[in-house]
Picture 1 (cartoon, rainbow, N blue to C red):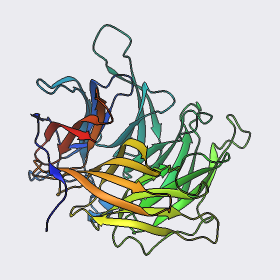
Picture 2 (tube, helix red, strand yellow; picture 1 turned 120 degrees about the vertical axis):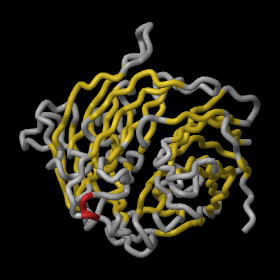
Picture 3 (cartoon, rainbow, N blue to C red; picture 1 turned 90 degrees about the vertical axis):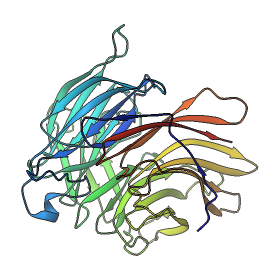
Length: 392
């Protein structure tokens, strides 16, 4: 099989202390990133990967991990801080409204909140400020999604290994939560659609191969009901046919060339395909498949790193972590006639074990080209690679 993608080589590499499961650049200082790690003590020298949970083995597991504050430098990368944890880290995200606040999903049913101080003359440092109990300690929190609306500051969704989805208000001192059973198996991925008309739609994807659009009704702060809000999972029809395996990544897109009422999302799956879908408009609407492409590895994470318009077309550069296939950079485009294409623009294949976590930052560029510094990781060999990609 021939490939149109260019092959990229690393600038430098680094071996981490524990297997990396997630990563994100600091919004306030792109010289640094935070890496979450996931380690299972099996007693036989084998390491479990994040896609396996106690539900699959029916055995109680002992996990630990760390949060690694990492200086991203193409010649001399280094660890600034290593915050050891008694839990494994499954996911982490900085708040879009308070970019010094980091939420961490743990393997013991909690969300941990950290702050980062970048104003001092010292290197930035992670400080734990709160631990929120979400579920019993045997339940893993698998993914997190901050509500993107500036009017819903501090509001967050979490997905669980028992198939449920939770919403909460991190700034509510009572940390009231609302929980809904949205899937029959692990909920691997979630994402809020861009707010539209005051409504909030939370997409969720599960190991049951189902994708759902869940309506979230946030209550005002300190509402007398004592709840932060509710989730209505049956307002839109779920889809059970498009994906032939678990839905592992969800990335909503906003395309100006498309009907403004049409909601677009990209998904990744264990079935090795990336897809562009339309989300149902109403309770009787159905999910639509606009484009798909096989990447020859389970598509574990998706990150939008660039959007631009050209000749009536909206274009999106997407960073994909593809498990055993390594990293792919994709160009997803739609035109005025609403046709969609997925092009594999670049690939990075130096990782020799599962690539679960990658992120990118923009670099100084000339003309219409855009250069990105990419940090990608692989799980079992604990390898971190730094490389660059230029989008024309």
